[in-house]
Length: 435
Image (cartoon, rainbow, N blue to C red; front, top):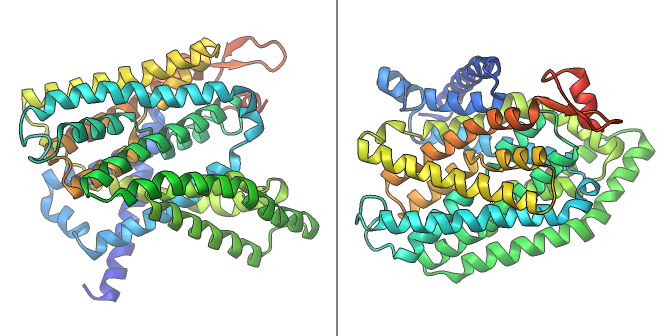
């Protein structure tokens, strides 16, 4: 395609993607799932798993491989980076100060337990030479990859569910985001070690772990003090000026580039930068300017792009289905069970512990990103890729119903502390969750 043809085709793709996300999202809302789940499913429906089966020519023409998909990918990355920046703006460190032990314990448990269980599953799979792991992949690398894949949390998906359920800025929502961010950072560091050894390049692991730690410390200390000047100027001028907004976006893109470059993925750079930004009128106006465009236009591209690369039909035998179910059970037990137990050992209320475990159990698109990297470098086969995608989709679909079952049907009254049934999305619920 020429540049002009590519642009015209891209507009058509955007129209189809946005319409599909809206329609499937409405269905998801009707059955009690958040909009984000509808966007994930819409991507699968538009890809080879459904449209490619019933109308392969149309699907191939609408979403051809090559430059057309690169445009969707690049746009989707901008969307998720902007969204995680907004999540960071909502992240209130003060709400988590007295629950630091819980956040640390839950994040560690959510990595260590899946890592151990995933290693045992990898031992079983690696014995079937070449079917799940290509020949030449050492057993310990297979074990570490499988553990990392099961330990990952759907950080962007969790953030979207927390926003949709009006948990942003609440103690539970902040605890979940802190636990999810820490767990994902640990899982990505483990994966960086696997890649470093697999590619025979220790620099990958050093950059990911050392660079990520230095970035977080620098941004949350020196960076926070420098960024505070933006808040002071916004308060003085009565708002965020266009030049100031341009500076924020420029710094955000640099942060995303740096964390992606060092191997811990761009969303962490965006999230940490958002957490370091000043609040008050500055935070409110930046959020108001970005949120409608990001959530309704750019972010759906991120979910749809991964769905377009998913082929559920590869799990096409009883044996493979059995392996897929085993991986699913191990993933739920390792993540949900360990996070719930860690929260309870830190004396978190039962409902909070169950709700936190429900949110941490979702894998979503962070899982798909890790799996795509593993597939591209030759760590796993397409068969194992599909099995783990199945696990990611199912655990993500489980998150909202489990949350609603154990926590969402109730609200805590600010004065009495008693739990009463509430209507999702009501003004009363929004007011209660802000307390």
